[in-house]
Length: 112
Image (cartoon, rainbow, N blue to C red; front, top):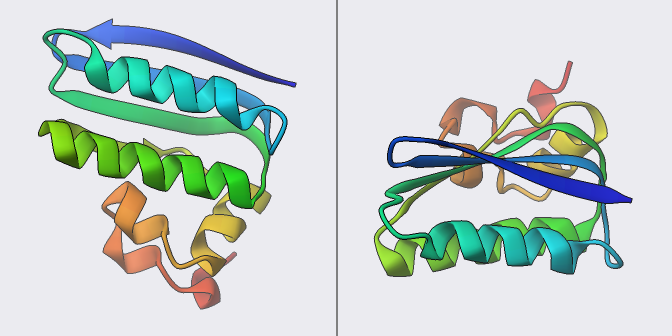
């Protein structure tokens, strides 16, 4: 089960994702990200994963797809809040720095 809520602060739209992001639930998250990027007046989309308990390869793929969409539309895009297993998955896949802008934590060796 997954849920996505959004909060807008000026030109920044934050999507708070909670639950499990997997093959079955990723279309809902993907649609939310696409909608946020396409929102009128939004210049930055933040995807907050702090309440995500599980993330599989389809979740990684949709986050990267969101980054590509945002880049194509000239919208800022950042993933934040990943912790535990979802953070490990993103680090091991080598995409955490690309998605978060935190180039210091792209290595799996930086795991707690």
